[in-house]
Length: 87
Image 1 (cartoon, rainbow, N blue to C red):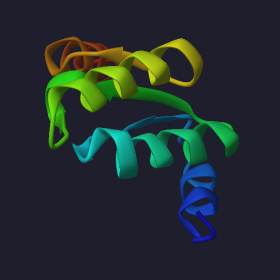
Image 2 (cartoon, rainbow, N blue to C red):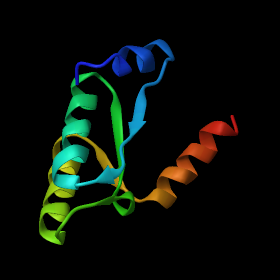
Image 3 (cartoon, rainbow, N blue to C red):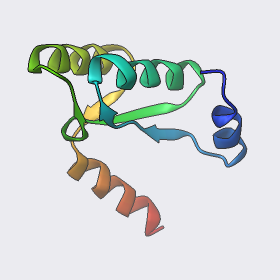
């Protein structure tokens, strides 16, 4: 938040971001919320995120999927990326 990243992505005509990382209940969730508030579509591959315990991880994925992002798995996202690169 507050960095020039959103403007750089918008300038590059990016409309969708894929968010991965450690601490699903912290950094990942905060990044997802910031991305949505900046107008991006957000994808979160559940198998590319982690947390200290499974309960906060699963709760955060559920919440993000209900409100902010499409939570799926890396294989689905790679399949989607392959389909748009081929065009």
